Length: 412
Ligand SMILES: *[C@@H]1O[C@H](CO)[C@@H](O)[C@H](O)[C@H]1NC(C)=O
Image (tube, rainbow, N blue to C red; front, side, top):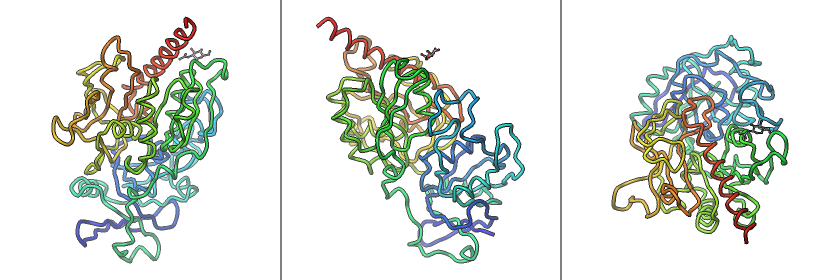
């Protein structure tokens, strides 16, 4: 037996009884929900879910098991055998706990090697099944972000003290999941086949971001969130800012590094999810905590500009998302955007900001290197592929700027 207990506004608690699976210990965190129907192995290994109790709104979970992350041979196979593996977003289960309605114990898939329950147990992450996730999701939508606890065994009967609930967003979660020292990856064919060299600042990077870059035949150096990038920047042709967990304002050190790179270093910079928020903060825009965030593989975003790329303004793209913070936007007043910056995409459900672009990059013949970010995940594992070409666009810009620089220095 297990209980999911939630902290409601002012001294109320609410509890869902269920059956425990996975690790047999308690877990505390922020309770969130995702509407994704498939790809639970990808979601659970996404470092952006650090500190969160993840509810799947889809009623049946686990039916295709968990693949062996080291098995090559799929379309998502990494060109090189790197330690992030072939399928999943990281080596560990990152969510603090898992909440499902019905857990499927007998899985079936040609790549599956174990069940969701045994995988969670192996990674020491507790889960609860038998929860009415419809009722829970309604509650989370009405109340907004809610702290919760999965309590198992003897503890299940006891209501924890209000102090026991912890808000992971008050910690620097990025420091927990970011790499500790720079690490370089080469594309298939080695350094000789690399068209450019990208620095990938790791705030809690999903493995598929690295795989998507390498597939474009570039070398990638993954650097820590607080890496002194500006000291080393001239060896790189572009800067890529990854996704990550928590509040972007908890890593102002990264914001300062990126602000300096934007103003002094004339090379393409692209950010995803938290990387996009860091670009916004560096530009002087505020980020706020959303009521319940956007998590799922079916978030519609409307493109407002092309940014000189394949994106078609006025078109709605379906995207994969996982975030609890967003960039604030208003036509005027405190949240008016600074000059030189424009929204690039907006969410067609809740009108939150989904992309940012340095507006110089929108003008053809612009002399300013492009700087853009998107709140959603163009690398989509596993979700819609609508916005996947954003990676190709980014690499093309990086290669063009590199050629321009080399042409200049050759003629000088
Ligand atoms: C990457 O390099 C391989 C091998 O040289 C080549 O076959 C492939 O077309 C290249 N892909 C891109 C996107 O440049």
